[in-house]
Length: 165
Image (tube, rainbow, N blue to C red; front, side):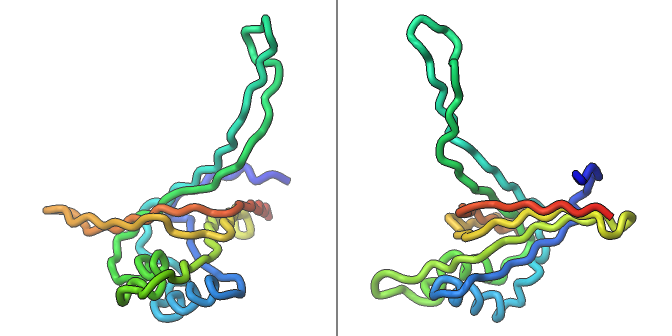
């Protein structure tokens, strides 16, 4: 059955996990060092899934006669009110601590975004992004507001799971 409940950001939680391999091991060391599960102090998460649709136009026709799906791209951003180096290390791996001699391993992880209304126990929606790599990191120090960091990411693919009690 499809989940038809509405959620608020306060119903959400974010956790990370890793797959085996050098990139996953690099991410796991950051997760362990910074207790990054759950990811806390997050104020905004945006996930975008895009398909490169290609319209086919026949000669003599003004409207497309077919839309062909193309590549699917998954990307987004996270805003976080906490600067402790965890997300920067998830972006740069060992290169966040010192200048690397050459190439370095870029940590890869899975990001799980779970929404569950506490008034309707057992009813939830979970979006999991697989093979996530951070592509940029920045932070802002405003004069009279909270210091915020922001990361942009890309993922290999996305899955969703709805549960209704």
